Length: 340
Image (tube, rainbow, N blue to C red):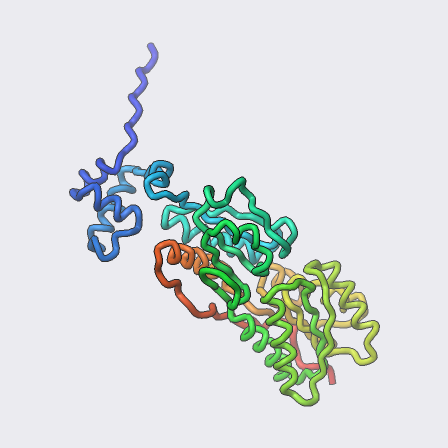
């Protein structure tokens, strides 16, 4: 004889949460909508959240969006999906968004840092705001024309945006240059990213400015696409054409540094005994190469968290948190004093 099917458990409603917590539905709405501060005590807010979790309550986001007139969705625009940095930025943004009932759609610009097209028939009706990481301000014209709030990450602070979240990039590159100078290096090659964005412009300017303060320091520059093979080729060209070999290579990121290390090995040079090499970003690649890279650690997840928090602040007419996120020089085996 078949076992009788149990009736499906009814989906809990906000009324059920209110009844179980002993509060009003309005209070439940304020707490679960994250608008309770200054209106509801922390103790009551915690009780409502715990009760909702115990009951398995899930807000009807579609109905909520209709009531609030928004989609509770943000768009994160990045130059590429293949770079670990942007994956970590997304993870931070998505984690912060989730705590506020928001979702984040990740969108790689089809042309890298070039113009980013509207990925929807109308972004205005699909999104509440846009976050753009390491993009040129001019590349966002199509999205800017929608009138949506725009938060720029790792971008020109003078650009036209509702808020900016930046890393202390200049300080990071200054730490790199000072570290090499303090080791005794005076002949430098800067392997610069052939990407026209604010963050790489800052790195180049800082290297040149810091080394210019030391009278006997010399600096040459080579440019490369953000690709290990291209970086190897650019480094090889620069070293074989130079009459005076540099003792230190300052690379704009870890990908370029990996290519530089390959070029040096193929030329019969040792890292760091003959040439020191530095990177920037502290990707997983930095500890995968041998010797491990001296590089600058960037708090990518915090960039995403701060960016999403800034967008939420703009949407709620609050002032976002200001100030650059600090970065850290991580000294590893790829740097040493120059050869005698």
